[in-house]
Structure formats: C-alpha cells, structure tokens
Amino acid sequence: MEKQEKSELVYEYTKRRKEFGRQTLFEDYGPEMRVSIPNNPALYKNYILRNPVDVAIQNTGTMSEHWVNSVRAEYTSSGINHVEGGWPKDINMNDPEAAQRYRRKIEKDDAYIHAVMHLGHSMEHNILQNNAVDMYQTYYSELPSIPPVERSSCHTVNVYREPGTRRPVRSLSWQAEGARLASAHADIDFMRSNRSLQFSYIWDIENANAPDLIIEPTQPLLDLQYNPRDQHILVGGMLNGQVGCWDMRKGGEPFAMCPPHVAHRELVRNVLFVHSKTGAEFFSSSPDGVVKWWDIRSMNEPTDSMIIDLVKLQSDTQSVDKALGISALEYEPTIPTRFMVGTETGLVIGGNRKGKTPLEKLPSKYEAHLGPVYALQRNPTFLKNFLTVGDWTAKVWSEDCRESSILWTYSHHTKLTDGAWNPVRFSLMLITQWDGCLSCWDLLRRRSAPIVTAQLCDEPLLRVRPHEGGLLVACGSSKGTIYLAELSQNLGTADKNDKQLLTHILERENKRERILEARMRELRLKMRQDRDVGQQAAETDPAGNDRDLEEATVEYMQTVKDLQAQQKSIP
Image 1 (tube, rainbow, N blue to C red):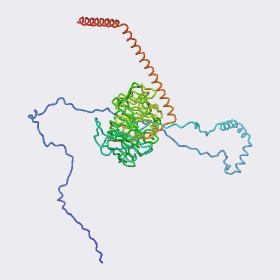
Image 2 (cartoon, one colour):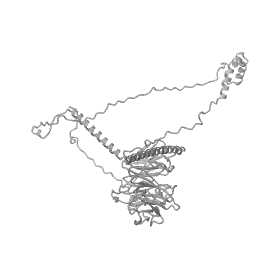
Image 3 (tube, helix red, strand yellow):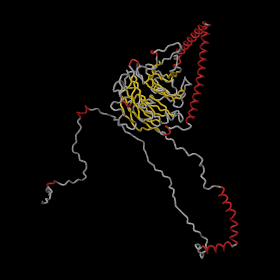
Image 4 (cartoon, rainbow, N blue to C red):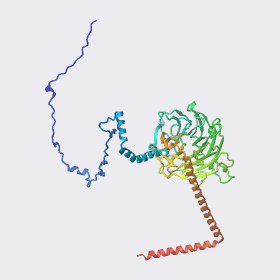
C-alpha cells in the first residue's frame, strides 16, 4: 500500500502598495471655526430672560494631610567574649601541670593572701544574699490571669426566605434538642381574612435553600409550637379559631383537629404545651377572651375552658361578652396550674386553673401597657419576675408589685414587636423593633440603654425566639424572612456570680417599688379623708357654701370693674 501525504491548502492574497491609499499623518492643529450662527431677534419672545441666574455650587472644607513620625530608636547589637586571662606569656594555660605550678607559686605570695582576706567579706555578703533570695522566682504567679476584653456583638449567620410569596412571620418555635425551626406565616388584613397562601414551614438550620417540610393546614396558622416531650409533634392555632396537631413523620397534613363548633370564636393567637404526665396536653387563647385546654389524644372537645373576665364581687358571674381579648400567653412548667395572659387593653392577668370562684381563677392583675401586650414571658431563673413588651417600651415586673414595674426601658421612637429572655444568660433581654433592629438589654451591665443593637433588615421584625443553647437567635420579619443571628460568647453564657448579682438588683428594685406603692396609698387615703371631711362640712352647714359663693362672686365682679377702669385710663 502506498503512503499518501496530505497536502495543505494555502491561499495567497496580493495587493499593490499604491492601492492601499495615502498614508495617514497626524499632527497638532489649532481650533478652527467652521460655522457661526448669529442670534435671531425674532425668537426673543419665545424665551424668558433670567437675571440673576442661580447656580448651585458645592463647597467643602479645605482638607490637609500631615504625617508625623516619632524619632526612630536606633538599636545596636554588641557582645563580649571572655577569655581566662592574667597568665604570664611564658605560661601555657592549656598545660595543666604548668598552670598548677604557677598557682602554687602565687598562693604562697603574701600579697595574694592579703587580697583574698580583703575581698572575702564582700564576697561572703553577696553569697549569703543569693542564698536568701531566690533569683529565679516567678512573682505574682498566684494572681489569676487578666480576662480578655469583652466584645459584645450580634451578627447574622443565615437567612431563610419563604418560597414564593412574602407573608409575615407570625410564630417561631425551636425543636427541643434538635436543629429544626418551625415558622408560621399568615397574611391577614384588617378584617382578619386571608389574602394569600396558607402554608407554614419546618426549616433545617443547616439548609437555607428550601424548607425541610411544608405544613399544609386548612386555614393559615398564627402559631405553631413544638411538643417539648416529643420532637416530632406540633400543635397550631388557625385563623378560623380551630386548633390542630401535626406529626412530622406523617407529612404536612394534620392528623387531629378540633371540630368548628367547639373552636374559638375568633383566630387562635397562641398555643402552648402544659406540663402533664402524658405530655399531650396544651392550651390556646384567642381575642374572644377564652382560654381552652386540649388533649391531643381526643380533640373532639376541650378538656377545660376559662373566660378572662375580671369581676369585682365574689357573687358576680363571668360573661363571654365582657371578656378581654388575649394577645399574649405565658406558661411555666414548674408552676403547673398557673398561667398568665396579656390582653389587648394592656393588662396582664394571672390565672389559676384550679380556682373555684371567678376571683380565685383570676387572682392578680397588672396594668402593663397603654396598648396590646405583644410579648409576655417569665424569667427562666427568677420565676417571680416576668417581661412584657407593648407600645414603645419593655418592662420587667415582679409578682409582689402590682401597681408598677420594677425595671423598664426608655420609650423608643419605633414600636416594639416582641421580646424574650435568653435561656442561658438570664439577665439578657432580646427585643425586636419595627425598624428591623434587634436590641440586647443586659440588666447586669447597663440598664439605661442596650449593649448591642443589630440592624438585621430594613423591614419590621415581628418575632424573636432564642435557641436553648443561648447563642443563636431566630427573628422573623414582615416579609416572611427568618434571620438567624449569633450572639458573642459574653452575651450567650452566664458567669458563676451572675445569679447572685441579679438577685440583689431585683430585690433592691422590688423593695424600692414597694416603698413607693405604700407612700402612694398613704397619699390617696389622706386625699380621700380630706374629701370626706369637706363633704361632711358641706352637709352640716349648707348656708356656709352659699356665703362662700356670694363672696367669690362679689370679689370677681370687683376685679372685673378694676380691670375695665385701668383700660379706660390708658391713652
């Protein structure tokens, strides 16, 4: 077989030099007027002469830059080489025998003996001093090391956005001993009707791309809470007043739901699990003013209910028509039969489930805020103290002082929407604001202002829930976005003396408020007594009141005449 070589195709283009055109030569050339268009006086009437002409000129201060450098310190490295000396030139000091003979000769000299006797005392003093003082001792070793400078901070570590529409976050709940977060979303108008989808979500905090599970209720959820006993069970309150239960292992459909005829008359704003042997009981609240207890195993009807209606007499009966709308709900597992509710009128009412009479069921009342109570939570360590958030302030209350709070924040320029205690550092309050800020108030460090304020977003923050570890905080916004923030170590951990210090602060403020309350009661009693004395004097001498009125009338008319005479005398 013959070997064929492949030949390459080559195309050659040729063109003569004269066909390229003239060579371009560039050079500097001055300006030259090509066209001059004169003014047309006939067009003056179409324009308006501006005289003077205002021209905006921006002027900034003159800045100068200066460099200052200190005198540079010059360092030199120096050393010394010590060699045994003092030997005559004819003596080889490396020869041991010659060196030994010369030492014996010198030691027999009288001058050497006198020199040694003269220097012996000073040398002995230095030797004894070295033996008495440890030259290599490390001083101040028993003192503790200086703690590092505290750097309080709060920054966003992850963002979870609702897929599709952007509905406000109505509730957040952490899974017990887990890494999941439940969020309830609902977009309702002023008439409390749904305007968009009705899904809620379960998020894995390690995956912000998509929710781990989609909850599909029949109506939008306003609250969704994990069961602290069973991390797969959730309960939620819906827009139409019903409550339902979900099992994450069975998907997003509810496995139990209360019938409509036993549900709340309005939307369910709060649901919370209660302490029970089975771990299957929870209770719910609504703006209809009724608190209902439920059992997951049988949702056909509530196990108990209570009307939040404050009665003044023991014989009065509670009425649903007069009930106060509930906006916040609080429950502490260590106090099984007691709970607290925040109302839409600004009251915080303490409830007792085991009460027999209306007065025993609602034994305490606190006038907390001027508007609805948005958040209500007991301190995880000091159960007698609880936090309330409403209108433009956050307040810390004590059960021993019912007329006023013991601690409070200043009035903010923006509305406060939610608040919670840090479960680990129990002196830290986390407050969300309408301008998208998360403020951290530490009662042990500074009570006049927050120690850290983090701008998480531009839209309003509506909900805040700290993780049980103390360092992570979840915040929900009005656009359906959940911001996961991380606190610094000094804000998420407690020291060994924090409990004692906070106890002193709360006891001191509690004592101060009790003294002020006692003083106010004395003043009110004195004013009431003075008013009763005046009424008795008026009843015993009715003619005296008439005389006082006649004298006041005569005095008033005389004053008016004097003023008129003065006005006439003025030219």
